Length: 125
Image (cartoon, rainbow, N blue to C red; front, side, top):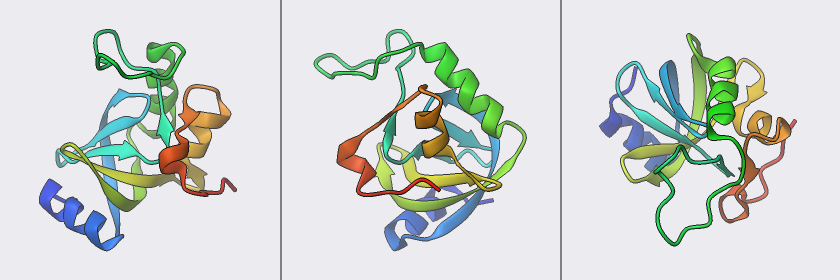
């Protein structure tokens, strides 16, 4: 597993890394067993109560359902991620569980919305 420092280096280089998922924070953020926090690229999921920053338009919907949807896709699995940047102390990445693109799956289920600013022409298969 990667440390946060190595994951951030991978992000700077546009590299890939594996993540054994230990915990899902919400519908667009998870934590790897090594402590690395990963923010799924290109999407915005509803924020848990009290987490939407003042002045920000947060995604609509049920934050608990979004968290459960992401949990159902990743908990107990090793996922493969392609780092593309960072957000706070998180690596932003396009991540895949088997052949499932997690960002695409969350949008397809209606539990997250495309964040056009960060989607950047990504294509779902």
